[in-house]
Image (cartoon, rainbow, N blue to C red; front, side, top):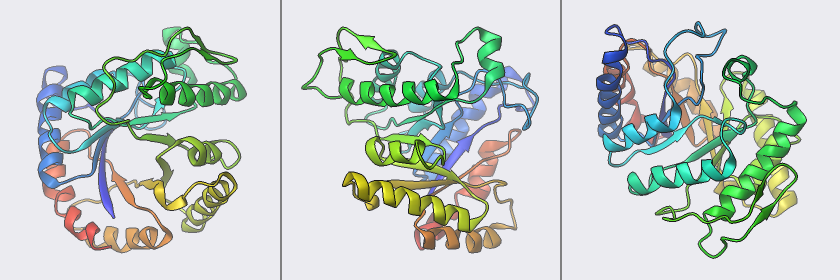
Amino acid sequence: MRLGIHVIEFTVPSGPAGIAPELAAVARAADAAGAARLSVMDHFFQMEGFKPATDPMLEGYTTLGFLAAHTTDVQLGLLVTGVTYRHPGLLAKIVATVDVLSGGRAELGIGAAWYEREHLGLGVPYPPVAERFERLEEALRICRQMWDPADDGPFEGKHYRLAETLCSPQPIRRPPILIGGGGEKKTLRMVAQYADACNLFAGDKDQVRHKLDVLRGHCDALGRDFAAIDKTLTYRPSPEAGTTDEFLRDVADYAALGIDTVIVVPPGDAPARWVEQVAAPLVPRLADL
């Protein structure tokens, strides 16, 4: 099993001036630990219900560019981009840019979007859920076409029309696509058809087993190799110092179900220290699961 680190808070004690130094330290610590992936959220406002919407929240792809400059090995992505946030042609160009500047380490994490307040707050259109899923599927097709050096022709969809899908420079490698969410009819079907990874949430292990079985069924129906998809799991609350043995016993059950990568979340006030002291020792122990 591999370890991912997902930063969702930027509430360092020193305020806005301290965010960049702390993130740079997180990036260096994640690289040094041998973490498989480092991600941040893609939101305009902090998530209500977790923390106040007024808490600090950075723009996601600008942040990935910064993290790319402070890392050499770890894969970089957002968990996850809402399809409504950026036109998919621009999104494909942004992710390709991160990939080029990071030496081939970008990932596209994407989903149908859900946070209505931030859309309304910044005047970003928030269509009904059925339309968001239609847009998600078209965005996936557009990104795959733009990252195909043999096809820079037009794209004609219901919601998006591109006269050209030119993307130069091309990514160093085609960025892997992660689709977030566990919807059984649409989301997991799109994982089987378009994605390299999925993301589920820790909790009821029988439910996780069921979601993986549903994904396997979609893969079988589409002729896709289920084993080729990286099954990631966001695990919260994350372990603290002194609780890592309990955490490892718990995630061993998920590994047995077929989860490949467990994603943990550092605290907002001192994430770099947590990565060094808590997350880093987990990497070799998880590798044995």
